[in-house]
Length: 130
Image 1 (cartoon, rainbow, N blue to C red):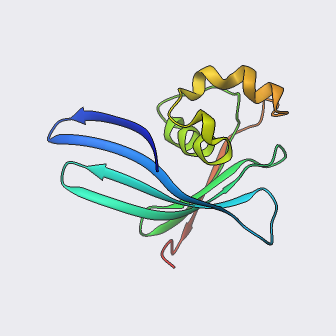
Image 2: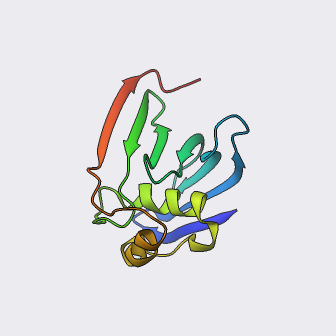
C-alpha cells in the first residue's frame, strides 16, 4: 500500500492510500486500484479505475451514489479541488511518485509527454455502486 497522506483533523486522524494496483489486461494504460480512506469515524475502501495515457488521463471513482469521471491535467495547476485526484493518479501511474506533492511534478509530467494544458472536467452519473 502507498500512503498518500496522513494528517490530524478535528475528531482524529485522516489518511488516504492506494493498493492493489493491477493493469487491465484488455486495455493498455488502464489500471484497477483500491483506494483506502480513513476518517475519524469511518473507513472506506473503493474500487477505482485510472487511465494513465497522455491522451486521456482520468480517474473514475464513486461516492456511494454516483459514478464520477474526472479528466485530469498532469502537470497543470493543483488546488484543493483536484489535489486528491492527482495524488491518486500519480501513485497509480507512477508509483515512485506516491505521496509527493503533485504541484511539484510539473517538470516530470512534461518530460513524460503530458502537456500540462488539458482542461480538467468532471462528469457525475447516477448509480456509482456496482
